[in-house]
Image 1 (cartoon, protein in one colour):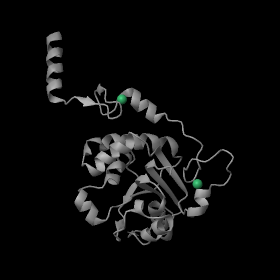
Image 2 (cartoon, rainbow, N blue to C red):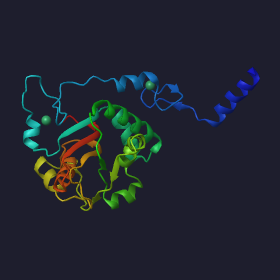
Image 3 (cartoon, rainbow, N blue to C red):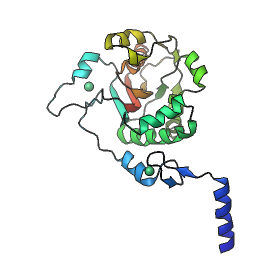
Image 4 (tube, rainbow, N blue to C red):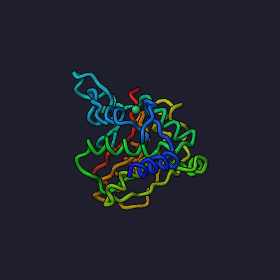
Length: 235
Ligand SMILES: [Zn+2]
Ligand SMILES: [Zn+2]
């Protein structure tokens, strides 16, 4: 029996590639070791605005960021802040075509979001790429991110939105230009009357992109629109 176990172990080592934890680089059996997984999942958040998830001082009663940006979504739920090493891992997926890590990001996204939401939505809408960008990249990382959520909750309907405007990179624009740049960017051919929606995006910075999608959803009759993102930039 011992010989058989040894043989199975040897075969497993040949068949299964050695994995390294994506965070601390220790060798382990999956893409993340238990210690790194537990510390990420149990993060205790700083004092943040309940609506836009920007860190604010405890004595700040109304959120300046919410007032300045006039967000139409009801609430932002964020898995993590935009921090190392998760931002580097996402960068590898998006710009180095390293889809190896998408399952890890999708799992972490699911675990963190499900801890925080009180009601599951009727509909999930992922932020689409413009077709030219999607053709160039070959995939939309936000669709990949939503996969585990949809697999675990098959009753949630996924609706495809179209990106009908090729926008300039938001990072190069000021706040006013970011809003006008996104205006009319999305088209949804569905009736969303009285539906609750979760818009999913990978990174939220100013919030202009997800806010424009939220505006489109509310125009189509959605009664509740949350935004769920993998990482929220704090500046
Ligand atoms: Zn680790
Ligand atoms: Zn706020």
